[in-house]
Length: 155
Image (cartoon, rainbow, N blue to C red; front, side, top):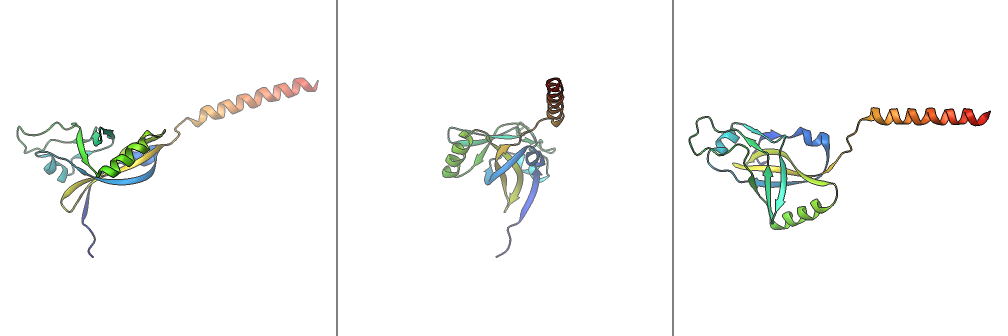
C-alpha cells in the first residue's frame, strides 16, 4: 500500500516544552470560504490555540488563519472559533479525561491528508514550571539556620 500523502501546515513546538503529551488524536477541521486557500499557502498559527469541549462538540479557539490575499467580502474572521470533527466515542473519552485534574487538550499540528484539513490533538498534562533559583535560595537559607542552631547548641 502506498503511504498517505501528508502536507504539514503548522506545528506547535511550544506544547512539547510546556506539557507532557499523553495521547494523540486526529480530527477534521471545519473551514469556510477562502480559509482553505489560505491554509494551503501555510498562513496558519496555532501557538496560542487551545481546544474546548462544549455540549458534545469539540472547538478550537485562538487558531489564526490569515485572510486570503485575493479574497473578497466573504473572508472570515482570522481568530474565529472553529469546529472540529471527531467521533462521538472519542469526544466522550476526551471529556472524561479532561475532567480529571491536570489534563488539557492542545493542538499539536495542522496538516492536509488526502486533500482534507486535519488537526492533531494532544491530551496533555502540564509540566511543573518554576524558578529553580528560588528553591536553591530557600535551601541555602535553611542550611544556614540549621548550622547556626547546631553551633549555638554545642556551647
